[in-house]
Length: 182
Image 1 (cartoon, rainbow, N blue to C red):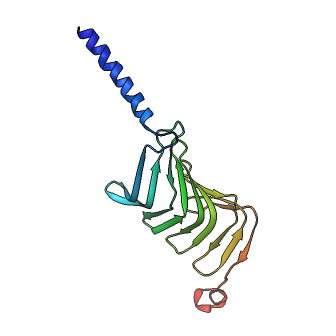
Image 2: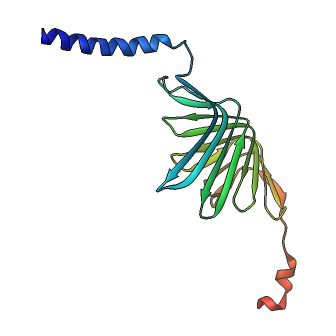
Image 3: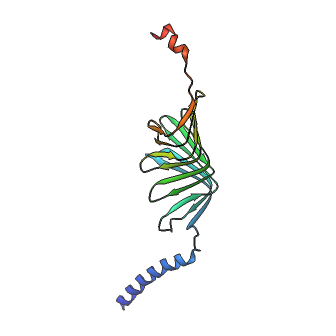
């Protein structure tokens, strides 16, 4: 009798999982959130704040992902200050750690530089950002760089642009100023 009950218990567990899958409509997310405001912490310190009007969780798919169909705003906090990225649409692939930001992407760094593009990829695993679309970086001093494609690390200390042009502002007063020791 005990053996039959154990077999029945395990059989029910397997059937329960199958029943859960059947209850989901084809292509439907496993969860949906509205007015989401998530805080990520590290050692009790807030490092990221994600804000979105709508989040769809497709972790029930073999290649799971999270979709932000009405846009996303993410605030990053570190010792250098706060950086913010916004886009009108985003999707994050769980297994690869790749985030695809689309439609009016704006990244504002802690030091006041602003990157705008129609699409930007962020590889969270390798800490790398890139695009194959046109972009513009406007620096805090007013200079800018327009380009067609780029690759960069997360803090933009390594920046590789394929084709670009722009305007750089050079402060001539510091070059000819006798008080600076030159």
